[in-house]
Image: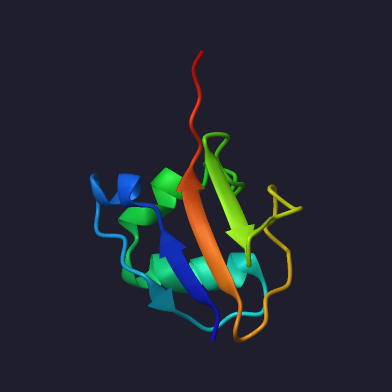
Length: 89
């Protein structure tokens, strides 16, 4: 099962444990996490289900290509990392 890990910044607002979940795409894996931790969804996805602008998502260290539908494939041993992007000047 893919593992989903969230940045500590998200843990300030809601529980965001590392989870091993079922799924063959990023969307399926995140959906499994959101089933048990629904508050995380609003911090990660917008109202259309796309990745929020201020959130970055990596699979095995590589940024996801599909930020809109999160259709990137994941394998059972993949690691998905969810980060809040930093901005400023």
